[in-house]
Image 1 (cartoon, one colour):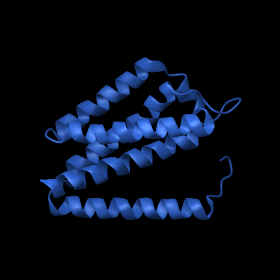
Image 2 (tube, rainbow, N blue to C red):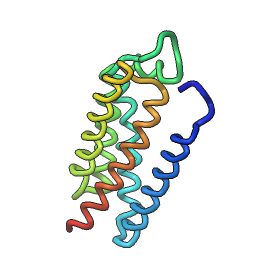
Image 3 (cartoon, rainbow, N blue to C red):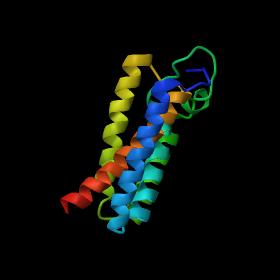
Length: 148
């Protein structure tokens, strides 16, 4: 993971992520929910690495880009999660609980996967968590609009 080259799997992951985001945002644009959902997705996804870093230890020996977050503690994680939820509630009141549940579900799955795979988190996994949680919230918002 310290290699600066992303490789073919990384390139495919970036392309799929951008494609899914563009498709979700286009669907939300048709229903005029795009700005509130983008703000909620941004807030919820940016809280994800803080929560993961408080929950799991740093997986590498020594220091790295993610090690400073793992020293933050549970208070910082609670503050980040509470602030993200408050922002989601303000901008997307009716759907905030469901969007937060999407974010929390994927965060739990990622945390369990990182614990099993690496026995903790690294800077790369924390960055990946932001992207995955943001995608989950955007796709969850599209599903809400399609269901309603």
